[in-house]
Length: 315
Ligand SMILES: Nc1nc2c(ncn2[C@@H]2O[C@H](COP(=O)(O)OP(=O)(O)OP(=O)(O)O)[C@@H](O)[C@H]2O)c(=O)[nH]1
Ligand SMILES: [Mg+2]
Image (cartoon, rainbow, N blue to C red; front, side, top):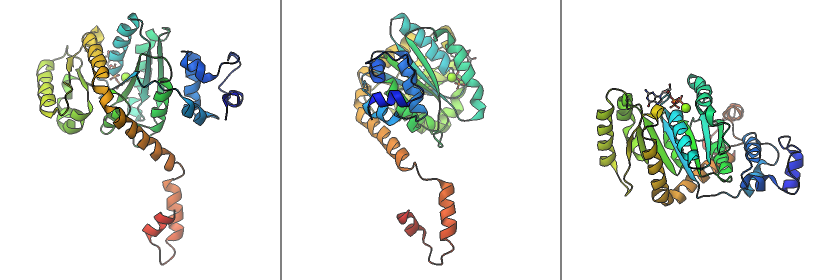
């Protein structure tokens, strides 16, 4: 389908589109309205969404930074402080805050909005919340697609905030070039429990809320763990932060830039494969529902020669 058709068919595209320019051209040129429309089309799988995805001119050189960590660790506050510095330096920043599906985190969306609100009017900042649809609670195919739409816009940096609970912080690795893990002094027990997964996923550690008791001891422990686990030639920084005061923000930006220049490129094909795997999984499983399987199985089980493996093979 051509974009002329997309423009005609999609209810999300309005008349204000200037003639001759396609939505994707506008996206590439940094039109925020076009970006918002493309995201809506992709998010809601409206007419023409596959055409948008297959025609994207994805800029692989944009730094995509995953920011993860336990609920309330200060991820949004930190991103907020980083945006402040980057935009003062005339950089453009996109943020996707992935809403946790758990109702316990429901309030955080509103919180994020308020905390980041001061940037909503800044033309170099684009913030979007996204509901994950992944039933596993991890990285959803939708998130991958929307980050790629964002990558087709001339951002300098894209931040993806996810709440790291169990598996999900491991899965964010497949999405981001650089993964920042935000911990707080109280995270001690969590780190012990999740040690193996956590150490491998993070490219940069931030121990936030360093104004609290136990921060220095916790930082020392993290540094020890990081060094004992280090497998690559990337020297994983452990940054002491007080996001509410903007402390540690310069160091974080420096670490992100450094990692983007050195470490990130090495992971590129690995990350692509991770994303391809998830997208293929998503598209192949699209028509498969457990409910339907149960209905079919109930019918098949009435036959005396029912065999699950034959059933699967024939499905
Ligand atoms: N004392 C102290 N409080 C902080 C610091 N950074 C953030 N906070 C506070 O911690 C609370 C949670 O901060 P958020 O930025 O919403 O944390 P988050 O990790 O984004 O939270 P979720 O998105 O809900 O997981 C807020 O009340 C912040 O003001 C810090 O460095 N020191
Ligand atoms: Mg948040």
